[in-house]
Image 1 (cartoon, one colour):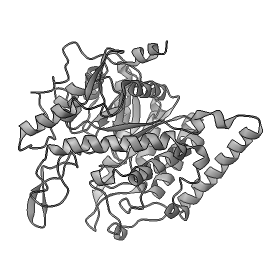
Image 2: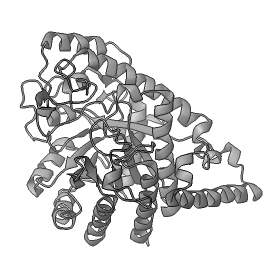
Image 3: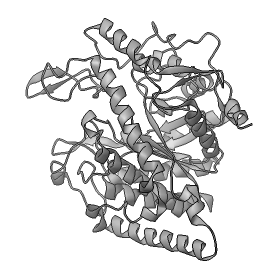
Image 4: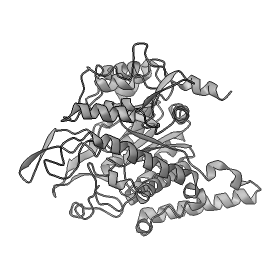
Length: 462
């Protein structure tokens, strides 16, 4: 019976847990909703809507993450910093998927490991912020918290939290998932299209030319297999991909409205995405976010920032993964290039001592953000690369598998992060700085980074 592994993979909620048991607990990073009754009305409406993802898909991801945790696969979690409603178009989704496919195939080809693909897509509409307000042209405004809450336009009216945006977020996520399923199960994700994924503006770059050489080698490998009598046309894995979705579960009201009980597994699932994560600002052990996600059977990500202690991490692992399910937790280290070498090893040892089997992933973006001389929030590709190298080095020293990377990127030709072979300079940032929140790697920079990660993986498994 195929249900047996699914049943074994499902996390069971604590006996005293309910989808609404987070209410009344300390909670951070929430909008100041002007009309709480409107929020509840939207949540009640969403509770009657179809799930965005299915429990069987979620348990499939759980099994694949167990493979990552054991060192047999690698996790690529990547996508937009903050999705916008206006980007939820067929072309917008296609552009994001294209660069994720490029990175995944380069990592697979370069390392020889299967790559589990998880997008920051189809729901990444809410963003935590360091301050509740900001000053624009001398006027203090509520900060933009993502399209699910308010609008980025710098006016008092636009920044008022609007509960109806949760309804709009659900429908935009649904539309995005429809396009993703059509593309990943149709011809777009076929390995025969590996050259077509390379966009015109990338082709002339050093990264683009390097990618083309790898694509040539993949094409010849497929032809060789066919010439040897292998029916590549009948191999589904060469023509379709499975892309899972993820987002930060920042608004428990929204997440609860999409939480469903699955009779087959006896577990609760948050059907807003396959994987949900808890941010570094909302990981309080006694807080609402940890309480809510402790009860759902989805794989759970946990951002691990510089202030995380070994005791914190041990307690959070025990709380979120009491049944020691391999791959149930994805611990996403975001420590900074200069500090990863000092901070990560004791955390690796602390988790190993508990007996939990999480996926360790590197988020090299958030610990390396700064404001440039031109006034733009940015990141250096060299710092991003250095943190990933430090992450791999720490894992090798501690005898732990480096499980994955967590990247903010776009398939568009933006100028938001410094460096790369095309050398984006500080003076270039204002040319195409289009992010709704944090700076993202562009397609060329992303491809360049993928080659370096593949090399680190080869060295680690040598």
